[in-house]
Image 1: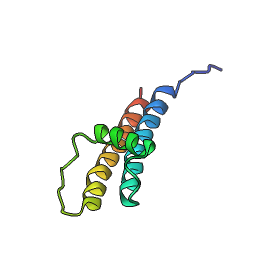
Image 2: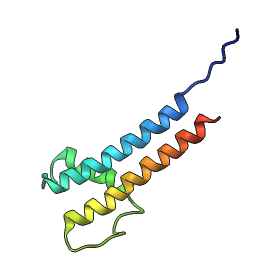
Image 3: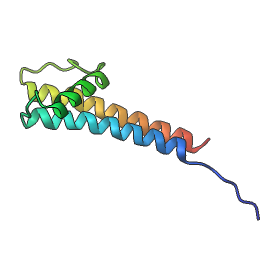
Image 4: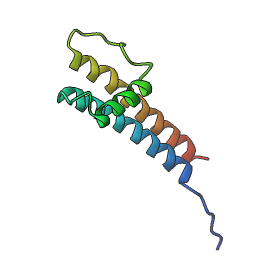
Length: 95
């Protein structure tokens, strides 16, 4: 009987990274929707990171309502990263 060792670490790491990125983006959406204090260190740090992670998606949609704009743009960015993470996980499953 032979045992073939296959490490799942790379694909798990990619999934974890995608999940963390999506969590940062969703947390930013929640902070905006709940009118969190932008002067708070946690809120401002999250806004900085989310702004950088969603660079391609910021102002993709420009409705007049700031909360809706944040939801659409940052939500789309979160879905994008989750989709890319899922695709890479499937690709690495076959390797």
